[in-house]
Each structure stands twice: as structure tokens, then as C-alpha cells.
Length: 231
Image (cartoon, helix red, strand yellow):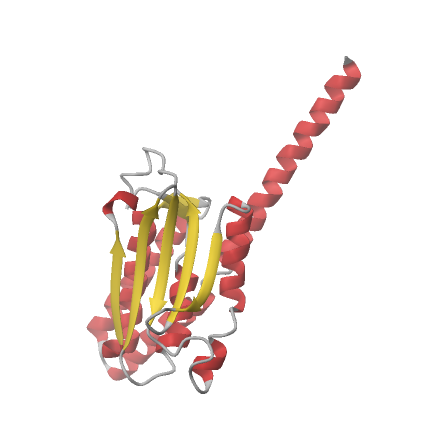
């Protein structure tokens, strides 16, 4: 009996250690997802100050401060309600629209019945960043970016789509760089695998009507009741 007790204690200790290591690994991956945005936001603020547009600079500083507060407040959370993630993306895109002005058009389309679904925290940001970096930024003409969410049976589908050249359809940086997933998408895929194993998908490819589409498929689970009032 003593031998069995010690064996069970070692098993429990090993299980707890494994859980702690996985959580630390997930946290490290999550915190690597958004460095480019911070640098771009600071550059945007500097440009606004140099142009003398103080009001807009103050607005971007306030928006950036709110985003950083949200990141820090939810630093320990791996999953949040989708509506909280979408609010983060709206604020994120508000800053990016100041940066690109009339070159960035945005639409967020989420079915009402999925707003309280659980999603990984900051999971959409690297997909949006990738779309802006490769689908919008290299081109002088206005670009369109869409973020969508819907439920299909027992799955949640998240989509980020841009109307850029897609993979292999453009010349120069846009078409070539878009063919490379990059560290943001690689980390996103790694986080999804850690959280859901084989019950998730991340696909990036050309959209049927042009542009690039990133699609995440997750198990559909509602957030805890105490989360659902959060924004």
C-alpha cells in the first residue's frame, strides 16, 4: 500500500508539472504573437507627432494603452469569449486604419449565436496582422479586410480574408511573402495544437473570389457564465 501511495504521488506530481510546462509554453507562444503591431503603432504615433496631428496622436496613444491593458489583464487566460476577442480586433484595426488612412477598409461579421463561444486569447491578431502586412501594405490602392465568425454544427469557424494578390498571384513582396506562413502563423498553429490537439484546423490559402483567406476551425464551446458579461 505504501508503494502504491508513493507511485500515485509521483504520478500526480508529474501530471502537475506537465500541466505547468504546457501552460508556460502556451504563454510564451502567446506573447510572441504581436511584436510587429507594437512597433508599427509606435511608428504611427511618431509620424502623427511629426506632422503636427496631435489630436489623432493622442487618440492612437489612448487606443494603444487600452489594447496593452487588455493584453495584461488577460495575460493568464488562454481562452476568452469571442466577443472579447472581436473587441480587441476592432480596437487594433482602429489604430491600423489611422496608419493606412483610406487604404484600409474593414468589415467584421460575426453571427450573434457565436459571440459567447470560447476562443484562444489573441488568436485572431496574427491572422489580421498577416493580412495587413502582405495583402494591404505592399499596395498603393485601397484594400479590404474581413473578419468573420460562424457556427457550423459543433464547430466554430473563424475567417480572416483580404483582397490582396493571394499566394503566388502577385509580383514582388505581396505575392512572394504571402506564400510564407511566418512566425506569427506558425505560433498560432502551435497554440491551437497545444490547446485542442487534432480537434482544430488552421488553413491559409487563396480565397475563391480572390485574395488570401486564413480559416480556423475549433470545437464550439460556450464561455463560462462569469466571462460572458466581459468586454
